Image (cartoon, rainbow, N blue to C red; front, side, top):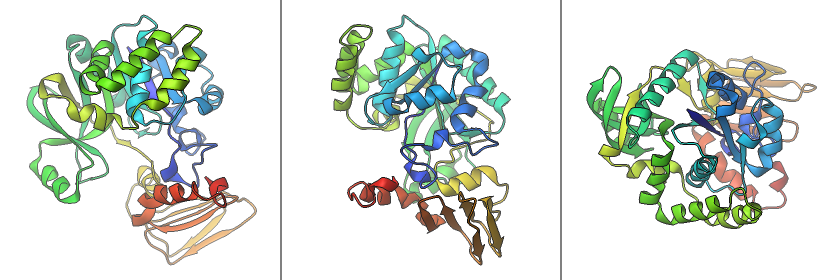
Length: 357
């Protein structure tokens, strides 16, 4: 099986730790390792030659530096940030152009997974399912622990085998009331974001549900390996609609086009400052602290100081994120962390603040 790990985001939700020059997937926050290194390490038994990295062109040099065991030809640079539907499609046709036919797994570079053996077992079982069902996409779901409206939800049907179910429906980040309703129903999984499918079927889904994007991808594919490749990709890739894979493809998939495999793995996406804390600490009231700091009467907070010469003191706070870097200090309540991306969008419009992105 081929595996494509996507690492093209700029990680705006984890600002100011994550910046355009060094996005979150490259930050060594977890025992001296970055999430992109952890992502590759946990699937290395598939063989480095079978692992590809999808990232922005500007991050290709950084990716090569962090992942020296990945063949350079397997690091695919996207010329523009167009979200995941174009990125996944481009990497699929790029893989097909090499002559490969068979199952492919779509993975992410910014997740943390506690039990890697369970993850590998899930991937291997999903690979077998994709080989036996080349006309279906395999969604990986996990039993929901609470009504989380920051993830997608997969509606599963009849149980086919031990941990495989029929697929019924999909909802992406539902509103709070709907989220609570489907959680109580008991027949919806959290979507882990991983999916496995036959390469040809994955491209077929673009032809069926994103015909205009498919036409563009085919034009790009024809240029691959020719003298016109660079110009064609740089010209056509930015014209594709900026849309997430979930919205473009996954939510359109019919019940007879998918299966659901349940995983027991403990997984998290430390995509925001507060999600970072939740991924690391054991209890909600615990704090995540790092750097030269002193905390007193602090609960359920993130306190990070990257300036070694400066002492950061936090007292009497609860549910806060306090982050000090060499050029930015951020103090924000946990319920507002999700709005950081909007702030950075405003920064991008003002030359006075653009340098802090």
